[in-house]
Length: 381
Image (cartoon, rainbow, N blue to C red):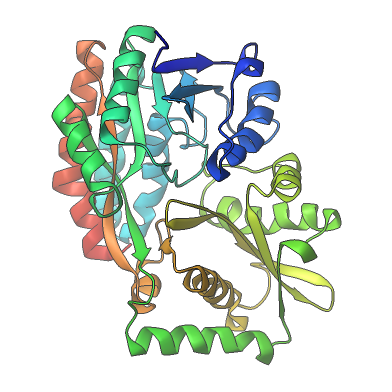
């Protein structure tokens, strides 16, 4: 009898029969280079083992980690919940509160390291800020967990990028299975054709800035190999230099792969031949998200590059009638343009791990539900 779940790694992936579907072709183009060369040539601050599971023939990437506490948060829960969170404390604008929470995070961090917190297998992990899900049923998700419990005993098993608004049935089934629902961040979702008149007016006003400042929107056919270093620079200026070095640090090899294999649809704003802003999105099952987003932060803020680029992204989602997953951050800006807030979770299965590890996840879940998320929602971050 054919096994429902099969695992493939670098040595065995040649035997994987990729489905001849849009998703199957995308998965093959995206994942084979990561399997063959590893993640680090493509994302500089990611050290992980990438493998692929098939469930009823459908390929799903997994990442396997042991420690790597300096990894990007896309494969390190420690980085997400401790290191990155410590950096975000400055947004509170309350020094006393910041010091108190920093001390608490330091104590949590020491305990979590001792608990081998990063000994984790993450399912459907594309090493991006937002992992959109293929057409997986709740039963298939739990069948994957059954398989991983046998294959990786003692590991924490995780599904990131879940929300009740986008994955309600999956969330409920994973909870029933025994997963903890650990809040991860506040996200913003823009549903197609639901924005009010004020939001539409703001987006139109932002879009009009392109003509005012002499910018032209360019699409995938007009982005060239010569643009690759500039694309990496623009992303770095915003997401690494301005925000956090714990964000995934895409390399030129990653952007070259995205251009060649269309694993991201890349658009930009060009003026007098120079690319000053860029975004890259992918779509799946009626939704799209842009893990690549950046602009020249050295140019005057009054120019409005972020506003222009956001208007282009909203326009692309609207023309495709797709739900736009806008990830986290600049909450008020996104709300003003029609997005609604939602809590994103990681579904965490930690049974079979050490008592200290299970306690760590339970404490973290409690703190985030009682303190972390209410603060984020109050401050509209």
